[in-house]
Image (tube, rainbow, N blue to C red; front, side, top):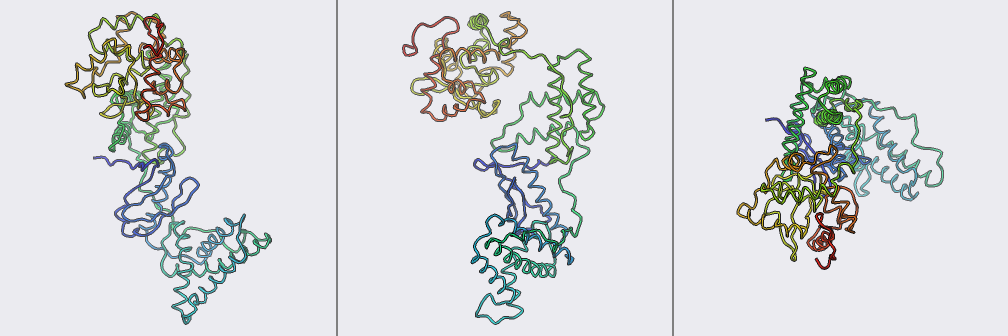
Length: 539
């Protein structure tokens, strides 16, 4: 079985990196820290059998980018443990001590603190150097070593950890000595700054630049030059299906990406992702356009789908595949003449024709999906997933749940909502229809191909053959126009339609208390078959 690529995990509202420490270094790493950089922050998480780091973001896309960077830092630390201890040269020891000095002076440059504080620091440092930190103890080499470790050991650990170094004991002792000397400089310069003398800064020629005592090891996570387009799609499918609250890639989307991969491979004769170039993808685009079998819009979509697959491959390799960026980003996609929202929207006479024809149909999807879309603005794919158990009553009004539970899918998080059933649908007999299926309350009310069946029916049976018309999606635009004209509040309209825009939409549907308000708003929507002259209160 292929190993699942590691991913950020969400704890509360924040994403984290949480990984097992590799088995070959877990005992060496236990109790030690690892310097990691997250955005503008540096932290030093302790390692046990696991390591856990906050990625400091609630956005999944940003979390995945930061995850890759933090993992790179951890890999460097683990590589250092694998290679064992190294011996620092005199030059390298001085360079590390110089970095400690520079940090203290640079970070405190704006506010160096009080003179008295630095006098205390200088005194404590001097006592450690002489082994007299405990005034009651007789100074000996042992007390000095103990005091130096206690006073400067933490600074040494941080300096080594930042460089992902494991050093031998002799190198560590020498570094403690040099850090102690550097901290004398720190106290002297900061005392001067506290007194108003900024003639000295962290700039100095005393300390050399640091050169690593060893070459960095190869990362354990590497781009796989033999990775294929099929491999990449399979990994993405597996990733999205992982976890208790996963959102699997829909089967139709998997088929779409696999078809694009097959067509591109047939054109180029090679399935390896690493060999894909922008020039080659552009040639494929020109070939598809020249064949005349696809619209510009369809060709454009195929290139976008191929670009998505390549981007998955980049992320699965943590950027080691195509480190300079997705090569398909350089391909100029074919232009297309767009269809305006107005042209895609159902006209009132078309809406009446569909709803009246639906009354005569026996197939559930043809009878009810047009009506459900007409009085909610929902996407047909959403309402086509409804089950009898999705319908419920609250304070006398009927609602239905749009949810991702039970294997259902929605376009985005805004799609999760509770939609009020317009009383007109109840008059049409919708609730009698759902009640007749209560014995199979968790089974879908409509067949899987319901949306396409309705679209074909509108075109071929109802006879609405206007090219620009979107037979199903046109309800979405029409509902929004009708709701606006009827005075439905923007926040209610945004929530009911499951739009990803509209900041005030968050005030609707978050608790049962808000449901009656939604029901009142839906009652404002007039009949699409005949004008209503009664007020919303009378209804």
